[in-house]
Length: 205
Ligand code: C5P
Image (cartoon, rainbow, N blue to C red; front, side, top):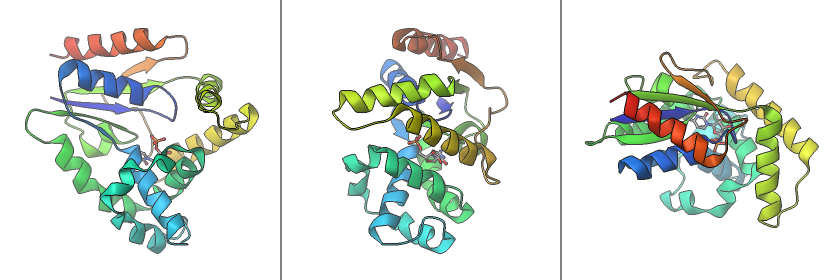
């Protein structure tokens, strides 16, 4: 069984994907990390994230990079969103994601284009979303809780820019896949959101 979980930043898709993987005993891939690794590598190379050549070169990041805590910060997220626009970067990361999705026994993947491009045949497709204000507030609270500096208005501006880039790009834009169940987590607590997703998967089987 392939479970595709797509949605914008801080919608709760990562939390839901991880919980589904644990609940159903499936391996999980956070595909955003791959784009974040490319963004970080382009910066380490001194390259330009908006240059298709520089971004493509950065797709040969070392595997160990995926464990780098720097990948989780907002600056790397913004770089990821810029490098992910380039079709050659998406092509270079496709096989790795496709192989993970089609491994025997199934898998859970979360990202922006899992249900549309990476695994359109997924048995379960979820699109997890929430209002920009609620997503920004969650990200802000996370940062403050981990002792980092944050500004809520700046967070809202950044999320809006990232959403516009992810939804507006030509190649694999963020969109609700055909047949996807939309889960709006704006008014849902963590446990309620997870329970809704578990029910959706059970209903599909
Ligand atoms: O999900 P996360 O915020 O970690 O993703 C970082 C960026 O990587 C996104 O803003 C998006 O531009 C890009 N991405 C993508 N396709 C995916 C996963 C992430 O384009 N499947």
